[in-house]
Length: 254
Image 1 (cartoon, rainbow, N blue to C red):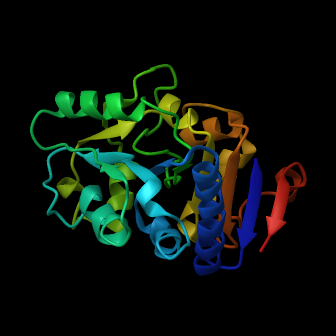
Image 2 (image 1 turned 30 degrees about the vertical axis):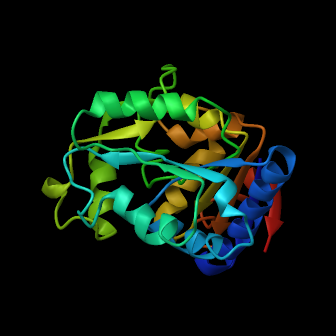
Image 3 (image 1 turned 90 degrees about the vertical axis):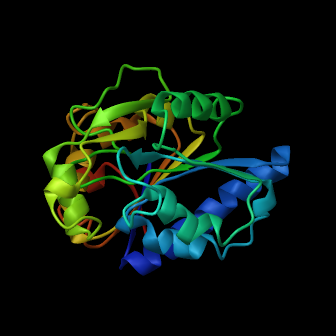
């Protein structure tokens, strides 16, 4: 694990996008194609903004969507399908894009996604960390044991409050109770994992993630077991990590 700390989210996003482009281009050079998993949320705005501007042959890249609410249409402002189409897939010409479709038969959608995802390894996964320490919608206590690729989960209260605070829903009652998410196991199968986690509201989650052993009560801690996890922070999100913990990490300052 390498922790990269930048002054602000803009600088973080630019550096992370450059690193992600290098990973994708290396995969394309090696095997003629690359496979990418994308997360969503306010913390990913700057990274995606810069990533679509990178010099990547997007026609050789397949993208997989990480998670989606159950019970809202794609036209809803909070839909992650809408988010990725507005901020990514409408701006680059991909080889293919696979979305988590929660309208209609959810189980059939999960089956299809799993089949496509597991045809070949994922080269790069962008995995954010929530205020409650979740990765994707694997809220605590996360299921570390399942070997499924996608599962239906119940959203916890802190996760719902984050969605309201970020402006996706007017009240907690408006947030769907369930979502489809890529599992912790499946995330960990990615060759490289990049987590872009800016802002002060994520400082407690980062403190707990970096200062704790792997536990499903802090789902992001499982990423520390991945041998190619790159964590991008800004000064705000890194602000609560103790100097003792920092001394035991490989830190790069931007």
